[in-house]
Length: 85
Image (cartoon, one colour):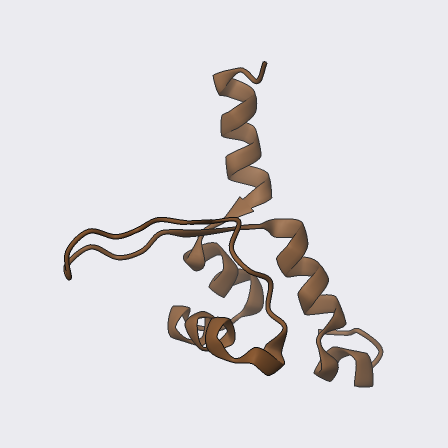
């Protein structure tokens, strides 16, 4: 069974919210949302999405850091320049 400490470490180091994804990609949160709806981007699906209640409540989305990093390394613009960012 996972302890609270282990879970906290996993959440802090291996899971990203939309702010963390935007920071990692060097883009705005709205640009991350665009990647989610653009089929050609092949951006990874979140591992968790909350069902925000009411219009004032925002959805919470979480991604595995590894999935986002892999996407970033393999996206078409990086393949053309040798994977450099």
